[in-house]
Length: 229
Image (cartoon, rainbow, N blue to C red; front, top):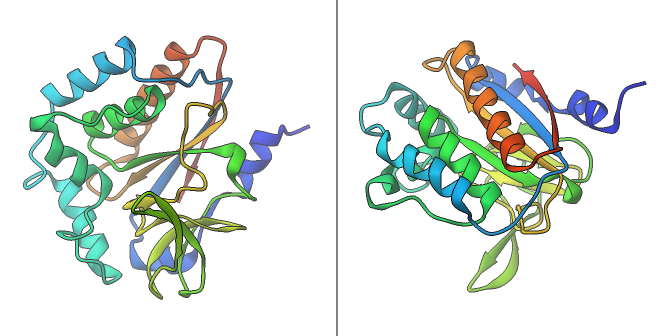
């Protein structure tokens, strides 16, 4: 009998409208259980420091440039709302953010493997993750001046969502407050985004690196994954 996690992964999907926009897009979805949350620590610091030392130039890397083109394709301005890996790489010379041990781990993998990568608390999902183009009515919870607020994406915007609303706007630009990781997170979903310049072998290597980092940081944890095309 399939487990709850396997059923959740089986329900994750990419809308054909997104595939039409970028036929080369793939998402590697990794789910981990039994995680040990907490503040940044020596393990997360080691990974972040290594990622900073090896960070590439976002102005010339083909995968970053492909993501800027993908953003333009649905009307976003990538210099104003940058793909997540672009934003992280621009911060690397002055130091990547230290947030918490789980967020630090996936940010380090994102920079080291040059791909957008986001993590969210699976306990706060309602139904499976779906990548689609917004109609403009979907709720997106964010923080404005320290207070929670609800916004809507622009029609046609590429968004990740579940049954309750948008979980990440503009493909991988900004995650919602509702599902963000916290120091109570023990079950999480991580989404690794790839376009043509990053082939399947490189995407798989990034997934392996993330899984290894999570399981090393949380002995006894388990992980499963699925590649979406």
